[in-house]
Image 1 (spheres, rainbow, N blue to C red):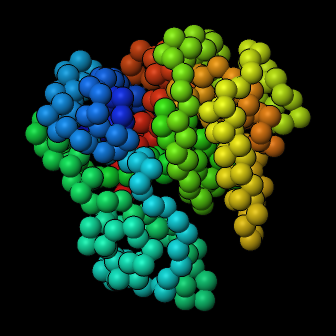
Image 2 (image 1 turned 135 degrees about the horizontal axis):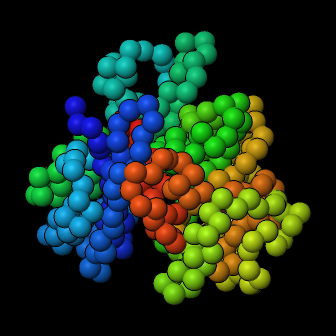
Image 3 (image 1 turned 45 degrees about the vertical axis):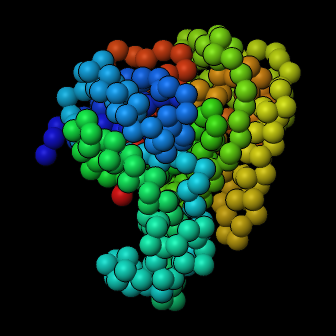
Length: 335
């Protein structure tokens, strides 16, 4: 078995990867990111295999990754994640039966989908959990692109699952927490308990901003990456600058509030104790004050140094925020 594995994300803007050592105490040993030409990829979807393959070669060379074993993280807005209940049965039988059971829930024929079921609880012969469905062609395109540069896709994982796992040690085992990764085009929300996902939503929200704005704010987080923010009772979180939120920022804050409120309204839902926020999107001016004003739970900004030991030099700015989710993909080994 390889001593390290690489978590990989393909976004609309770049390919990003983190190499993590295997073992009881994983370490981040290498990381890197290479920009992609316009329209060569969307979130977790490859459009131009040649362009993405070139970027992957540059990424592996520039970051000096030792492993060619990859866990691929998916965060496309076209991925279906929903609660599902079915009869208790052996894992292999469920895998065979699932395409027939969920066909009416899918946007494409079951034969054209990659399906996974994450069991959470059993009761009276029924098992409840999370159904995950992705378009098979999109996954196959990425795997084929990896093969062009001799990379081996050892597993495919929902990026939100990795996010919940990697932030789990920041909370007590009996706490229910939400982890939020704000990207340029997709915001991932996972509510988990002890690292086990209970609820997942992918919010398709574009928040236009300039790279200069993001970098300027991200530098502040690099100096104090573990800032804790008050709830809606304080509209100006400690450490945040004064700014008015743009319409895109306000829209995202409102959607996050309604998403967490929907979870809280579910039967037997436990109250959230914390909301962990990460991803380069939080470095957008006005984002954190807007989130703190919208969410009735304390927020904590999470940088990559908060979730894993560092064998490599510490990344700075927004890259350290983006790497949290990428590390989460690697540390779980996929499903």
